[in-house]
Structure formats: structure tokens, C-alpha cells
Amino acid sequence: MSQAPIPRPGILDIAVYVSGANQVGATTTLKQLSSNEGALGPSPAAVAALRAMAGDMHRYPDGGSTALRAALATKHGLDASRIVCGAGSDELIALLLKSYAGPGDEVLYSQHGFLMYPIGAKTVGATPIAAPETGLRTDVDAMLAAVTPRTRVVFVANPNNPTGSYLPPEEIARLHAGLPAETLLIIDAAYAEYAEGRNDYTAGIELVEAHPNVVMLRTFSKIYALAALRLGWAYCSAPVADVLNRVRGPFNVSLSAQVAGVAAVEDTEFLARSRAHNEAWLPWLTEKLTGLGLSVAPSAANFVLVRFPETPGKTAAEAWDYLAQRGVLIRKMASYGLPHSLRISVGPEDELQEAVRLLGEFLAA
Ligand code: PMP
Image 1 (cartoon, protein in one colour):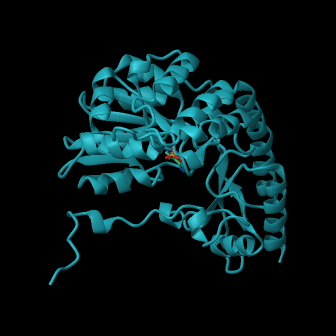
Image 2 (tube, rainbow, N blue to C red):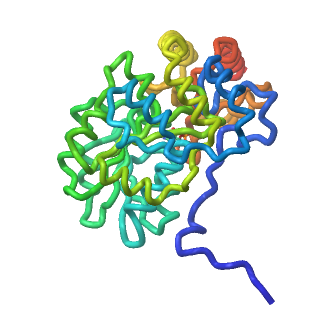
């Protein structure tokens, strides 16, 4: 008689990643402020490019994402041969871990770092190590203190999800300087474009240019508003790009993602509008929530982490239910070890107004 195959050690320690939308069953009728997606819908140029490629979908896409890498290289002034595209930055996180960590190795990240870091580490049999944060911020000294001879990969998200905290370039450089020469530092800059306007964010690129053991990850899921197409990219040294190109699937980025990605990169007007939306509504949301008596972590991204009281009737879990029952979906944070907090994305104006109105009603009840 056959039986279910036994997975490799560590696989069954992984808790399934439950996305914001999967916190509830059906998603389409809800106002979704749970996954930090683009607030303005996709770029109209990206939509047009996607429609125009439909007749070519019987062909395999360009396995090297050539036009997309060229567009990114031009926009950011980078070497296209050192850009590797992936099916979301999630895929690149997984490929980097598969290439550089394995059983017996440690993968270090900051306490409230993105969930795919420990999930990806366990998937390859490595041990995830969370360094403590100080006041919901990545603590470089604590990260460095947690480094051991077995630390192979270090993740730092800047700005960080879900805290929204931002590490100045000097701090990331200090983290890099304290790591062993052969340890890989991955700067996950998924939300970099939101920080750019306020903090002149370039630290990822500068460190990659200076050191072969640094990778910067970017995504099209946030400010470029193409989350459904699954598109991300890595900028890295030539040896790391070579490794990623060996281990990735031959056609890992779909044609739809490639053509929409090129259009989105070139749509600078859409990018400026998206950034302006965030610059207006992030402070608005922070101020309104603070005004309701809630504690809001300062954010450099397109979401806020909000701490709720532990008083029965006013808790985060009850607030989440209250909003969900009224059609507004925000993100529970228990899986990040923050059971008393909820994360709210800076979505469209009407959805933000509704979320704030409902939270006011909930807290006043
Ligand atoms: N890194 C961070 C910090 C994120 O918040 C996310 C998305 N939630 C990702 C990576 C993954 O993004 P994607 O796979 O959609 O590119």
C-alpha cells in the first residue's frame, strides 16, 4: 500500500503564509487595505501593454527578460547584465536561499521581518534566526550580535514590512561592514520608492556597486501596482547574477509581466502620482489614527502598523472583525508576533475614509 511521502526535515515546521486576502474567503467585494498594493489601480500604460500582448500568449516569453532588464537599467543607471528578474521578489528570496543556504546554515533577519525569510530558510533546511528589534526598528547592533560562523544569509527590509521603519544608509553600511566577508546581505527594498521622496533612498544600489556579497531586491507589486502579475528583480554582483540565472526556471517571468513591467517602468507620470498619493494620505492616516488614541509606528512605506489596547472590546482582533464584517479588510499581525497590532495599507481615499470612520465607531462603542 502506498503512503504520503515524507517531506525533508523542517518542511512541516513551516506555517502556511496566509495573505491579507486569504484571511477571509472571498475577496472581491471587500475594500482591501491588507496587502500594501498600489492605491491607484495599475498604470493605464501597463494595462494597454497587457492587452496588446494577448495574441502572443502561445509563445514562450523571452527567458532572459531582456527588454525589461534594459528598461530597468536605463531608468536606474544600472548594468543590465547584473539584473535578474523573478516571479515576484518572493521567487528571488527563495532562489537566493536555495543557492546560498542549506542544512546547518543560519539565515538572519530582524524580529519583525517579512515572513518569507523564515519560510524560505526552513524550506531549504536552514535555521532562521530573528534578531531582536528595539522599539519596532531593526537594531543593527542586535543583528551583528546574532551573527555566528554559520550565518550565510542576512536579510534587511528597508523600509521594513510590517513595521514601516526605515534604516538610514549609514546603518545598512554599518551592518554590512560587520558581517563576515562571505555572508550574503540581501537588502529587500520592496517599498523603496515610497521612502525615496522623503529620504533619498539609494543605499541598496550603492552597496551592491561596492560589494560582491550584497543583493538588492525590488518589486513591481507595490508602487508599480502589478501585484497580480508577479514580478520582481534583483540587482547584484556578476557572480551572484550568474548563480541566479543557473537556478531559476528558464521562463520564470511571464510575457504579461514582462510587457506590463516595461510599460510601468516607463510611465513616470503614474509613478509620480502614486508617490504623491502616498505622501498625502500616509500622514493623513497616521494623524487620524493617532487622533483616535491609537499608537501608530512611524512609517516610510505605504502602510501603517497600529497598536490597539488590550482592553476587552477594544482589541486588535475585535477591531479586525468589526471592519471585516463591514466590508473593509486590513491585516492581522499575529503571524508576525504582533497580536495587538493591525496593519493598514494606504489605499484609495474613499477606502481610507471608510476605514477611519469604522475604527472611530468601533472605539467609541
Ligand atoms: N519583501 C517585502 C518586504 C514585502 O513586503 C513583500 C510583499 N508583501 C515582498 C518582499 C514580496 O513581494 P512580491 O513577491 O510581490 O514581489
